[in-house]
Amino acid sequence: MFQVNEGHLSRPIVLPTTGEFRLLEILWVLEEGTIEDLLRASEDSRLNYKTVQTVLRIMENKRLVTHSMRGRAFVYRPRVKRHEVSRVSLRSLLRRYFRGSRTELLVNLLEDERIGNTELQELEGLIRSYRKASVADRKTNR
Image (cartoon, rainbow, N blue to C red; front, side, top):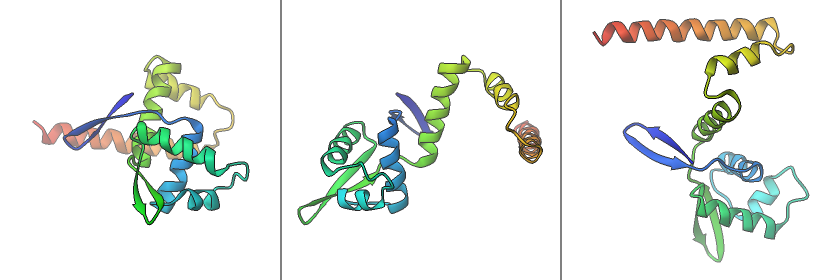
């Protein structure tokens, strides 16, 4: 479980499993949906109603989704945002495989032979702009 800080509020978020993440991705697009809606929107034809129902119940216990009633149908909505799950996933990856070292993660990415020059230039630009923003923040906080 990880803490996500949104403004001054902090709440724990559980890292979703692969199957839970797939359902969250659909819900982020739909914003809300019944199990039938999720099945229709899924590209995985192997999903069945009972499996999705069970996974959604587990996700509700983990506070990843919530539901309301529409007639007799449960309508599910995500309780977590995509960027929150991304941040929690990245923190988990960093801690589990890179001993918390962002540098070690970045070196691994840079050593990947599939990174092209365009992507490298984009990364350089991002680092430069973050560095400039950091310097500007330090100057205004003096």
